[in-house]
Image (cartoon, rainbow, N blue to C red):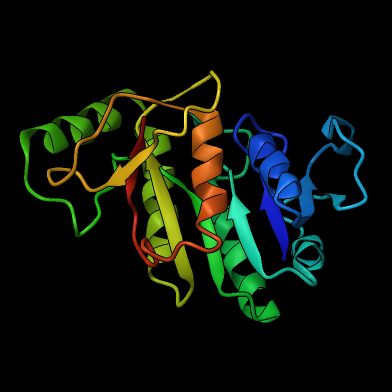
Length: 211
């Protein structure tokens, strides 16, 4: 399959690209600066552009069967385009291209209907909103946009991403129902995102992923 990756040169996004290539997929890496693409591969096409450029986003989707977004919110207001605005452009272009599968990132600060009432859930929600209010606002808008679409989405709610080797012990579930650890490696998160191309257990769901 050809997969379009947004946020491809980020710390998780690049690991997604490498895993896709290792699995034999073709990759279109939509990037602001193609000079940051650190690998030459016949199966990898770096495509420069901005999310404000609807034509460039549509071109990045040409021939792809799925989208993986490793885009994250800004931690402060101003400067970059809001995450929700960028994802809105992607979702619109996906509809135009007839692409259904969207895999992306979120946070436990945004609730999933499958979460059960639990004090840990309330603490996680309050902490995220207190420490990074603008980021949580962006993510909430993005989640509402994706969940409200007709796309076949999976949004991985990441507790805390850390550097480190692939452990292969990532757990996925819902707050108040399943055991959730405090962190996960970016390599394991990248693997989870790529695995969702074929694993539909979390179709139209937002599991929390942790080590």
